[in-house]
Length: 236
Image (tube, rainbow, N blue to C red):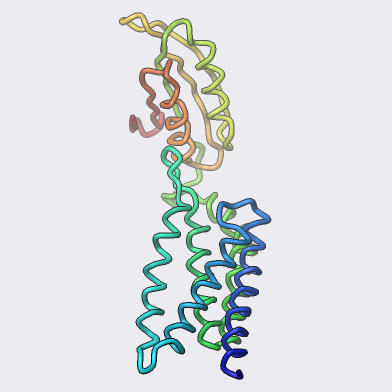
């Protein structure tokens, strides 16, 4: 009876701690939220209890080790590729941490499980704003001088106005400033919509790559390219 209560306490502890981690994910409307993180922690706790109590003379570390690799398949399901941007890595990492917390609870290491839960919540909340500040530093780290970009999208004549609107929407979502936009006819009868932008905070190549990925999905756009005017470096 005492052993049964102890196992129930371990599973409930895993569920409770997994729920705490999932609250933050649920609040931010992530794919893996309250129930997913709680179930991952419960499943890890159950597997650890099974390996420790279900097999006489068994090695509990073998099942625990499989949890680490097995959770990777679940985490891969929440990772999405949006153009050149990969989304869901933080959510997948959080699921991995929830599994670790559940395994600790299943092993009866309640203090370590509670401390791990607190650390995960702090990382997902406090370090979120810190990451935004650091993310604004240019990748090169050498200079924050203004950078000028030229962006060109080639389309059909009848789709010029539509492509202009899409180009402006795609490029003005970042801190890049639109300086000029114009069009000219090409030799093959198409229209090249050309935009000039300036970044006052140094180079931001990711904003241009994101715009390329968005415009490339438009059927009316036949080609997209951009370049850094001051370095004369082309990226197609």
